[in-house]
Length: 284
Ligand SMILES: C[C@](O)(CO)[C@H](O)COP(=O)(O)OP(=O)(O)OC[C@H]1O[C@@H](n2ccc(N)nc2=O)[C@H](O)[C@@H]1O
Ligand SMILES: Nc1ncnc2c1ncn2[C@@H]1O[C@H](COP(=O)(O)OP(=O)(O)OP(=O)(O)O)[C@@H](O)[C@H]1O
Image (cartoon, rainbow, N blue to C red; front, side, top):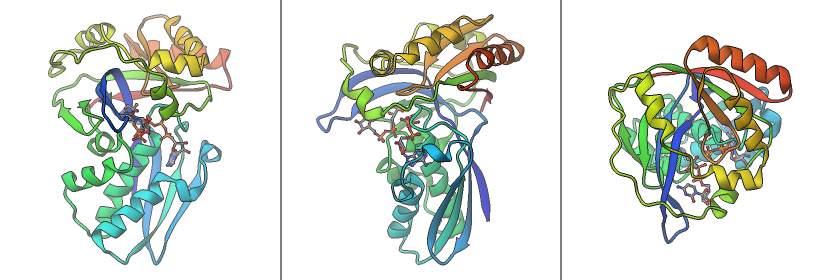
């Protein structure tokens, strides 16, 4: 039996630089993976089965459409193994929320079953398979700070990255990634080279303040609650940056201190008891 955490994926900035003929967009994004997420347990079994429990289990659609089963079936057919697995997902992350829940679940499923079934596919092979399940899956397989480009499959790894706490806030409204991209008007050119290597936390926060998430505007058209989520975060003491992650609607706040992030969490939770509000630690 193997248990692993499918960490949340946060886009600290996200610039859209173009569109491919197949409709997929070209991105530049700094992704990080805080220490919280879904929990996945795989154990050997004759057939493939999935059980979903946890606070957001009700929000996931049909089990047959779950990216975990799609990832398991893909690995089975590519490797030719006749083994099965019973998989348990504890769904702790909000669904369709811009924090990569399904992609991270798919990535961890590929990794853990690769071990459980003794397949031994390389990281590159898993990444190629992962990309067919979702543009975020290669980054989630890597699981550490990186600049993502292409449609998400190119990763420039960052070896030295500062530690900080991040505040995550989601109002409960699910937003479709496809719908957000379809409302986007691309007006930006590719950016110059980014170098986030060896930055202090303060340098990182200052650099991020000059950047953006280009999906924020189309997401706000679909889900105006994103604006109030951002204002709720921005209004907190010592908040250095409030921004949306991915295609939304989860927004994050960066704070000077862990204590300030905790106080912001308590304040927002008391005003919005039905919102999902979490602090998590980011680092390597
Ligand atoms: C917005 C991000 O979360 C940023 O990390 C990701 O790019 C989205 O990754 P994902 O959820 O794994 O996306 P997919 O499941 O592959 O794609 C969902 C839909 O989003 C749009 N999509 C996604 C990724 C991308 N680079 N360009 C796109 O236009 C496409 O319409 C696609 O049909
Ligand atoms: N294991 C899973 N966890 C969450 N959603 C899943 C899963 N499998 C399939 N889905 C479906 O995928 C859709 C997108 O959900 P997900 O939580 O991955 O979105 P997201 O957080 O916006 O992802 P991203 O940031 O990669 O765009 C939902 O409609 C959901 O029903």
